[in-house]
Image (cartoon, rainbow, N blue to C red; front, side, top):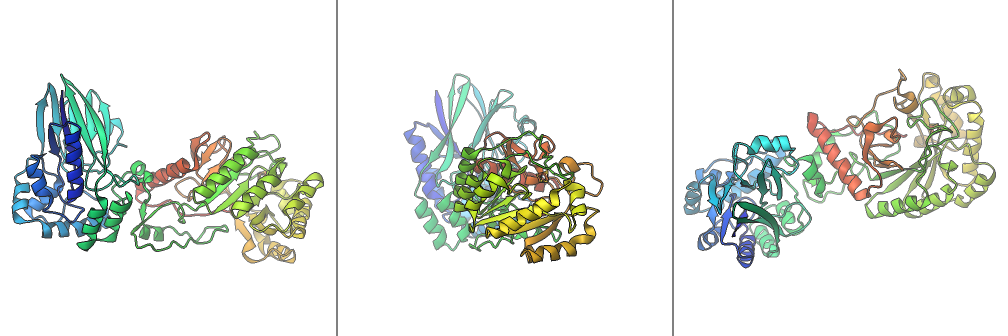
Length: 562
Ligand code: SF4
């Protein structure tokens, strides 16, 4: 059997190179191959050269080495985004200025690929892909896309690097291994870096991706001493990428801690938004990128559908609730689990909705549990605050952190009842009065319909008499979902035009509460079943980035007070 080590991107990190070579020796590797990008992140540009020579590392050139060898004006990494290129330029200029002429000349003489029969196996080593030195072979490439890039080789084993994140896959009999890079972490929140070991035995090959610990403190200190940007040093110290993220595909990027450039958020506000969400003030931590979750693009707000059945069957109900709707109750135990998860995952507010939540026998216990932990809003038609429920509701009297949000669709019973059914106006008004009596904070939303369009001011005045004033009253549009799917005056919404608000139902996780009904809005399902909120956040981030990439714009941060 022959065992070799292959690594990419020493990236001027002599500490990681030393540790990798020591690890490869200890594991019995007979030869070590470097697939290029000798500089390009750290400060020790020339320091890695003697190590490569002394240890007889067999090197091919990466795009960085070609550029430095020729004295090019930029690294040729292949970034398409202007901001990615700005950061790439900072470190390229430093590397070009701090690489000796002798080392640059040596790089200039490196081959662009290496191909060799090792123990009966055809092994092909490239930097990017067989098509281009700066091609990105990401793990998320579909088989067809990967095949398109690898069939030009036709080898048994293809080893590559360049992206910075390791993976391996067998495709059409070819073992494709992205060996990762050793000069910086793989955006996985760990400081260790990665290389690959290839075992070849009588025509068979298998690869193992190996994590290596090294003296990251020394590397960070050397970068700081060289005056390199703190954003780069942070990556070494935390394992998260803080620059050049636009080139990373949605799947890989959503797994990291940061997702978009802070300045991209400026494109998000839409003047038509309605709702009670305040603009999110993001602390400026001196980093060019931010995590999507917690911004206006993906608010830290969790929606929980306690159930889907309702005492009403409003003709515009976006989730098609009615007395006959499939119940889909979450139940108290699952509800509590989700609230606990939400606090751990950084959610800052909870919205509880249905169907009619007050049809759930344990709704008061749910609201107590939720509002003890996070600011909570419960959406209700306020018509069931009678009898036993009225007595139970009294337990919530004066509770801080709980808001009752209800609907009134006109200043007169006839207007309100045109869409919500006979007898619904007076009972809702009674419910509002009782909530007020209990000292609970109140909000009212009006769904704008052709019938009530001229009654907004009248309704505002009516509510003011009952203590609901200012921003506690909002008018929201009619949305073409659920029962209103074919309503000609309703607006169409889908993931491309509405910012995500993570929504959990008994069916799974959804993009937004407007699409919480799986039967009428299957397009807004993000994942079916009991999905951990951490995973749900990641899936929504990935989908957001995919939507954004499709046409180059962000989904608008249109907010709708459901
Ligand atoms: S809009 Fe609200 S009150 Fe009307 S049917 Fe739907 S869930 Fe029930």
